Image (tube, rainbow, N blue to C red; front, side, top):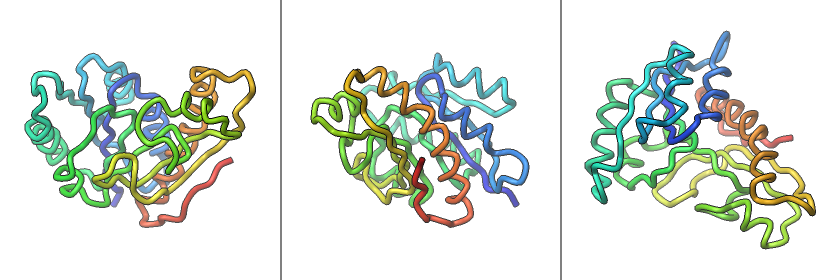
Length: 197
């Protein structure tokens, strides 16, 4: 029996595409839903073109009522019955109640070498700090922001002429390699960290 994977996005969905493309052949999982918090997210069309069921729950009408928004998320996810939820550029902070409901089943990719630079503007923070390397991490989601067990990391050297934008562009292909490898292990209960390159 293949494990069922739901992917949550907010934008173009490049990590979602990498995950979906990896779940073929002998892969132990299959994508069952791509869910966005923005109905105009470009990743929704990409998912539809790949034959994946999609849904959009616009967070804006809910204002500051995160619980009402997450109730709709949970309803859509419950219909899809995922074994694993992958956050792939999903730009909403989730409450502890939501995380607890899906305990130990949510993965996230974050554009820094965690535990460094939780939150936003990770690339500019790494450059400003004079770090020699930057990268990305996949971790299990807990109630604390960008926390939880690290299941994979990829790192690369920061160049003297790097800007936050060029660094982000150079890290993105590593994200596309790392996340699928971590997911493949995770769905068979292997939490041995993936280290790239």
